[in-house]
Length: 313
Image 1 (cartoon, rainbow, N blue to C red):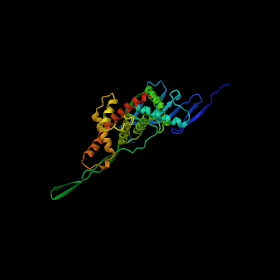
Image 2: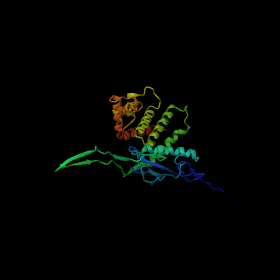
Image 3: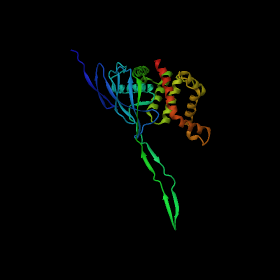
Image 4: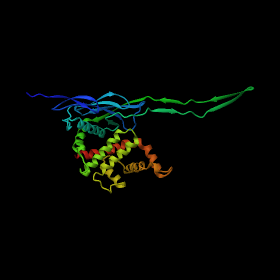
């Protein structure tokens, strides 16, 4: 008589228990969602709620806790049908990261990570003004009034609730394309195009996990460089690289903007060498000021190019 053996599957990363059978298995993974541009703080937070559309219940996202980083239960009912390749815990953990990467390639305003990041409280320091005094003569008397201001330290508690919609079917399709790349099996002798695509995906992942805006920019720009020049053409740099990035996109991105990204990225590598008032210092400072507007644009650029390459796999 045939019987199905049931095992308990333990996910080391999430500490969650799920049921696994030899025919198929399911898992629940704890993930976190935070604002892409504005890093979360304990006292200033945007509580993001992800809304999955067109998913056919293959993947479920359930909000557990709303905080600076929204805590979410990611549940996959039949991983093997979604093209997870193995039931071995170490492999499942690795491929969950591919699923998270796929989410991040389709999300725009938020980042999904598999761990909670540490962050400091956001505080506002109200600085005291200079001490002032007032001298008055009242009859035969002189009155001296000392006017002093006390420094006030306040912690804000601003909470914003927002939603981001993401197409579940597109997430699954992109995940399956990433699985086709078989990232964990790549070696230094693998085709150059596959290695550079892997480098690009890895840089994009790091850009999603860090809370530092400058690091986000640098990682995502690296992803664009690798993805634009998969064949490793040594001449693909400077203005030629800028032009190629624009050629790969369909959203009419201006080459002048890509050039600004490149010049700022180059400046970040040697920011300690700049002298006050020189052109490089101005480029660096202007880039820092532009980060809030640049980050969504450069993420969209990187996602678009990476998705184009993944569709071919």
